[in-house]
Length: 95
Image 1 (tube, rainbow, N blue to C red):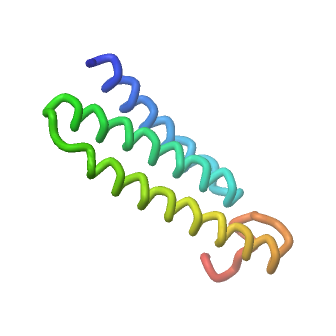
Image 2: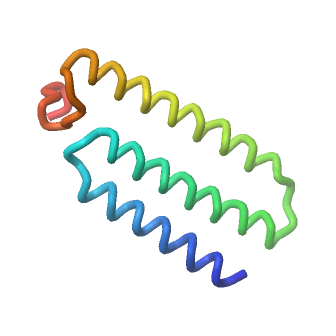
């Protein structure tokens, strides 16, 4: 059980590292955010499993993470249609 906790913490920290150093492309940022969401899902699952709580919160978390992913893809699609690429630095309203 403890090895999974270390694995999920390693996943979370590597996702944060990827998010910090892949800031040029929006697609890479979205993929690293989804990786962070998956590692947090693993943390929540291990916590709920160890304390024998109900699993309904996991379903709510999954619904919110799917909504976040769909919103990110919509922003990526609109950015590519309006600017022609997914470079963050060319999107002038962010900086």
